[in-house]
Length: 161
Image (tube, one colour):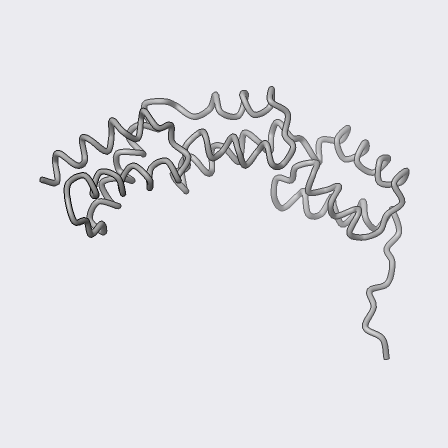
């Protein structure tokens, strides 16, 4: 007895993608990857993608904006990390800039300071320099700009001495 998946038709693929897109935002790259995974012929896949985009099931600009808002607010990611992730998803530079415009700089600075303050409680450092360096690395790894992290890390480091 073989355990192979049966091939799906382009109509079934369209229906599956519409159902998936109705549950969560999807970028065009993810939809195309699914079509390739299901071994849909390239011409049929192109027609399916065209239809999904025309009917707004897939919209990279909307996906990027939702992703940026979610990662900024909930995961406390900085703009650098969000931009990098969206570029990896092959979102256009224009759509990425539009998405990042939703992140308010004041809120980002407050989120960074809150993040570093929480992290400071868990850092075991040999010296003040080591403490500062660990805060700096952590902030940059979360996708914040170096200058903003350095400023916030100095403030947090001074308040923890």
